Image (cartoon, rainbow, N blue to C red; front, side, top):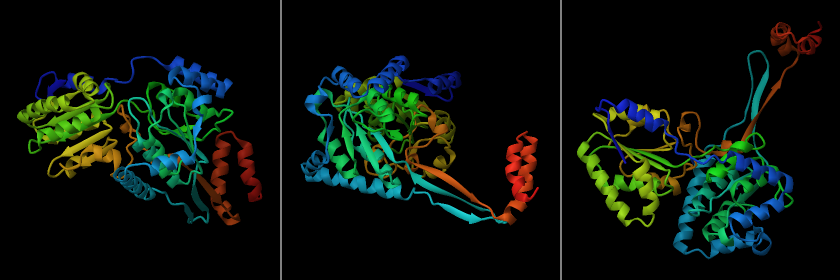
Length: 429
């Protein structure tokens, strides 16, 4: 764990290294992914079967290629009632938040008499990648499928790796609750390729969303343009801005909530109290000792954890903007001024009683968020990732006479006489 202070002479250089550090996989998977995608495009299901046997160690012909609506419904019905209620609460809150994101169509006539507007329409089909490696994430399925459903997507397709042929019933239960149409037992880069290109069994989709490992992320990156994607996600991040009025163990738990995802995850604390920084560091050790995920969380904290001491929390927004973190917690009595000063963050959690983890499950906003400083230019998953906008224009003779001559002049200036002619012929010229 790295300890920094803004009062140290070498702070600027040390902090710049933290900002610039790339924690994505050091292994260059681009060539391997390109070969996998080529194989899937050329051989379809045969390639999927071979790669699934290689990586997930089961025969799709024996275990079955897909799981139907009956299996998803059965998994949902079999849930412990308390867990079923928790899943239903999460789904309802996620749905309500995303319904409010739906954009409105526009249709108006301007002063020149030109009718202008735009229509929002959903894509026809969306592919949702649900990880199945270190852990199964029904919450991730809800966060991807519900916005697609709210947007109006007609066909929702889930792909998920099933190591040794097994699948977490919670994922199936979430698929039932979200209204998923297809669940395929394939994962990895080959599953992403199948969604993009289509195979004999799996029809292609228009948009692919959802987190995955380095191979999945690289496959999405390479296929952007063939399909739309949500983002190229990297390791999880949390930045906690906290004063000494917090309980150290609470802040330690918040930092480890992301560290347990992966050894490459990063947890950063900014505080204005050196004694509190010490207390949090000690509390992290105590929390780690009790965590079943301690090996992963410890590697993350030891390799990537950072504690930054500042003279005043007023310094925190500038540091936060440079980090552009996925998650930012502001654990103070009055977090509003600090939030207003932060321009770059995937999602912000306000106050002492708003741990980031509540946003992962039941708060409502999407937990699929930009990582690796991409919050500087991108946003979390929303209904808009499953929609596109089509503009429309309508002119009558008077409107064309009002604005057409300017268009003719610009077309002539650009050396495009056919453009100019298509307008001028309607102006009687």
